Image 1 (tube, rainbow, N blue to C red):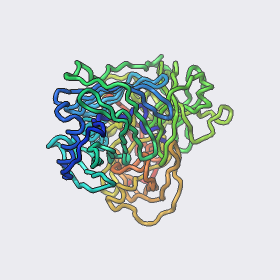
Image 2: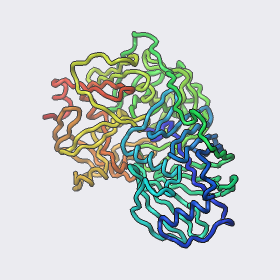
Image 3: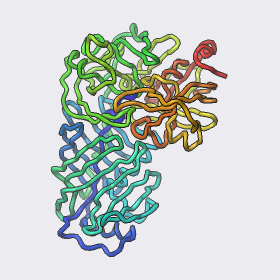
Image 4: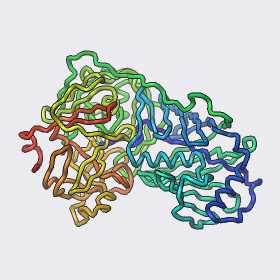
Length: 523
């Protein structure tokens, strides 16, 4: 089950430039163009003409714990780079036309199409794009409590709702209609910085209730962007194969979850091998591993709410002879009794191993094998499928009753296929009655679903008929997606031998006909 939506992704802070109320003038033009011009004038007007970028430093409060952030924003393009530190966590994220994140020595691009749209809209907010005359359309404008709400749609982006205060001309609130639901951003504590003004306090609230607060301590306007200030860091591998022996590890099932024997700081424990999760351990087992937990992180996942956790550094995490060193891990609640002595299941691992090694999950043989990254070995069999990433999880194309969509490939999902409600409604699929069930649980709560049977499902060149499945009823969290088609769990992935090549962004599916006959119903 996908444990953490954000992984080591950190929230962005936008440059909404605000004037002090005492210097504002009354806006007379309530048209969207007039509102944007009044806001531009109130926030300094031509004072911004010679400011190409800003560097912002301050405190970020996430998971109820304060940390530090330092963000550089190019005001002409919305491109950015941010360093966040909390406890032992030091992660860098940015936008250079594509969102990227860097943690544990891994630098990964976020190329999942709906998140690409969301990133364009975040860049639009970062550069206060409503002040431009081009680059967006306006879907509507409406009055709201002494304010006007203008709905902008940046080119190639998600809708952005900007609330302009009609008294002081300031932007009071921005709502980005993201893939995960509305992200609401409010602004306060306006201060003058030279000839312009800036909001020194900003609060972000997600659709699952996660709250992130930015308290700005220092703003440094820049007339010229410093060289390499927005550059991605270099990749710094943390993984190695200790030996060729032990590179293939047998696993066992819990339902259709994959359980692997692992060692964390040389302490033996079982982990769920979850392609949708980062290194993630329960608080009780983190003590057993000798981990020191500090810092704070918002955690959301499959359910409709959120919780909080912390970070720790593990000296070593190994599965067979595949070893990760000096790894940042997340410590947070798990949906089972994970106390040592009650359960040997300590948490999950997945993304970091997939990113550091070419990984093959052979469901029929019940083994996982790891090899060094490099040119892929020639393979005359199997179906190669490209994939997208949201920063850590994997998404591939599949087909339901003739309708294509992007499905999250999640070995931590114990079901077969779960359709997401918006995709099913949009294509008028399985809208009739079905038994209501709780089909799973994880960080953020339960997955509310209806039992359905897919007439035809096609994955990696294989047709499945009369496939038992679920239709999610969740309105928020990763199973409440607005545009994605669904989730692929172990109940259908078990039909394949799957090789993951993360740097090359493709998977290879191999299915033996004799195994498929015993797997699920197949044409």
